[in-house]
Image 1 (cartoon, rainbow, N blue to C red):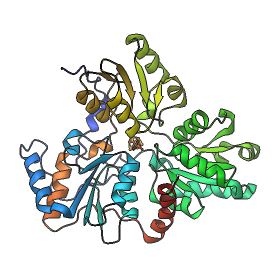
Image 2: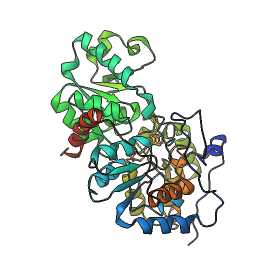
Image 3: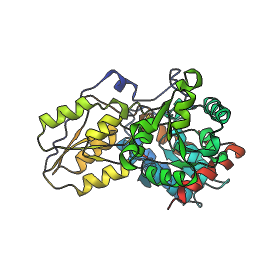
Image 4: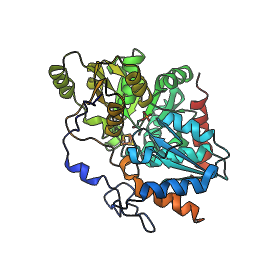
Length: 389
Ligand code: 13P
Ligand code: SF4
């Protein structure tokens, strides 16, 4: 059967996709040392296959669902950020964990693996704009404000996996927990057993959507702490009365889907099912038929009836892959324009070949290491997540 997939229109950001060379405007702005193979090299697939075979069990390749197909084909396991964290922890025999994903995921893998294992990110510029919206100094300033108000005893800090190791360390030091989009409700249930308030970092949307749509809180129970405003832009009473103190961060990819895109697709495709990730804005999630993590989205599309129609609000590489895998279902992108995660897309086949060949040559490229003190405290918060009922 022929697929009904229609590629969304290209946008200016699509020009950033190759991810080669120095990008001083990126949050990390790091060049790739050494010689990258040319993207036009016809032998890239053969070179990656040969290098991976030469390394054998010494290397284990993890691939996040938002990675390009050209990279995903070399992943030993694919998954969302929760599954990949579990998989990294479950591979103590692999000398090298090659992480095809973004920086915060590779940091978590380093924290969860043994000291002898080396975690490699094929392009150091593969950061995450959401993770960069919460910087440790800003978070400590917020916490000092809560201490001055005398409310820290009631607050449990919760950080989304999409945060730096520093932030996870802060959360571990303050008896909190990490969560991902597939266990946010369980993490919040646990947190509200420990205290009466949650300080949720850095994704306001995941925090709000989980609290309001899954746990029965009112929007008024949530306040938004803006690190760029004095005192977070909140009064003492707002902080004292809030149940959820949300950090003002968001995902630039999922933040692009709007209520208008939901209305437009419903008009255009009668009977369409709208399926979105909880990083989308609250009004979009409310207007959708289904909401869930990347793994949830994949399972929902796998299980969908042949002939059914789906408009999916998540990263484009994943939506396109699902559409091509299910030609008997009409799977379309919720936005009309291209919407890749440009940092995820920095990991391309040339970077993968380069990283694998460096390992074969006995050099360890782009190793991600978290300092031992931060790693210790971050691990407390990650282990708390892995132990959630
Ligand atoms: P999950 O992998 O937890 O679904 O998160 C999506 C995402 O944005 C990863 O960066
Ligand atoms: Fe970060 Fe959003 Fe990209 Fe995920 S999709 S890595 S949250 S910018």
